[in-house]
Length: 151
Image 1: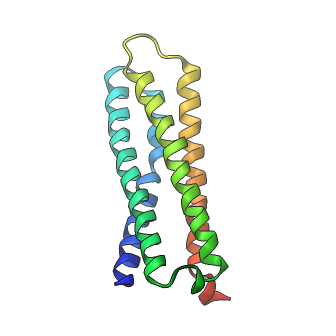
Image 2: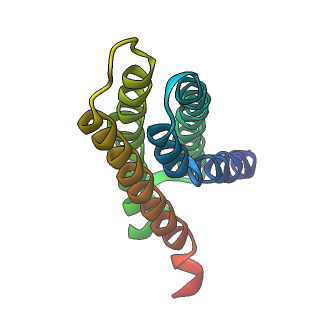
């Protein structure tokens, strides 16, 4: 049963990683566009961020479930313990950096009044930083998953 959760964990983690690859470019393009084009781009990106929310949450649930079914802390070494910490940090990155930054971007381009260039630039940077840091943590998690086999 553990391996079912491991496979689901891998699929959802890959989904989160793939969805986030173009998010920074979408943020940049959304800021460059104006009017209806920017609103459509922002709404499309918002759907992507919502999917990323689901995928990273499922990744965490599946990984913890596989961890517990596999014997938990008494069986797994420090690499897996570190991975648990990183998955929590990745969740925080998604829900406290990426999602709020994209929501700010959507709000700024959806308002009828003029949007502040500073607000748009800040949101764009936070999306880029959040996804970049998230992808870095994701890659570190991947290495940690194979640490026992490599060393």
